[in-house]
Length: 253
Image (cartoon, rainbow, N blue to C red; front, top):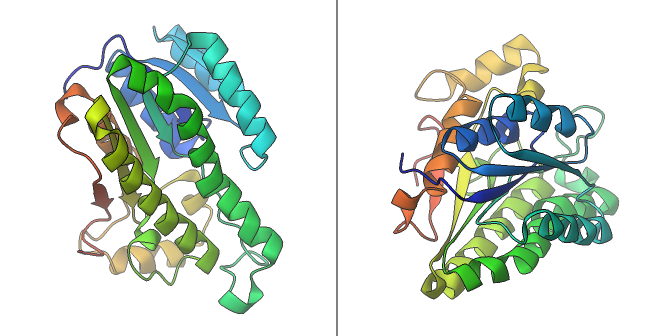
């Protein structure tokens, strides 16, 4: 992977899973880190990475609250004046009594929550942070989409699928509008990934999910993080408006 030394990245949802793994990959590429999460544990992640030689700072914010997103953006700008790499990784997928809600069961409150976190927060962060990239003539926006935003998925609620499809559409618009300024915008669309949340499912559920994937297994957070790190690199400057499907061949589009 091409080095991104001297760059600064903001990663949302960085306290665990894909976000935390992405932080590790970007740290290894020489990127300074600002880690954002609603969980206070993101401070421990930043501290641990700092002990490993990274430049890492934490910001705690609830991305479901637009005013908190605005405050977090101001905090980021006060810390570093702007970022070169924005990874919108945070997302929510509310369940109904521990299972995927059917279309008719989805409460308007859950619909709005999903869109605030999965679409509105990335929109607001891009609005606030793209001007800095534009002034520098270099930038990378990587948005975490999903297989559910690309094709029908029985394992996703309608609100989640719709939000990820909307995120892909927004990313393509940013990619086209900001390409003349040296900025790329791309999505990573994971399939079934072995995250802490996935591991909380019953073993037979995970086995059935793996059976439907040509690769015969779930993906790993490292496989997602490595793709994000590539898209954030100098070497990915001609990759723009793409959706990188990482699902073991489950959906080929």
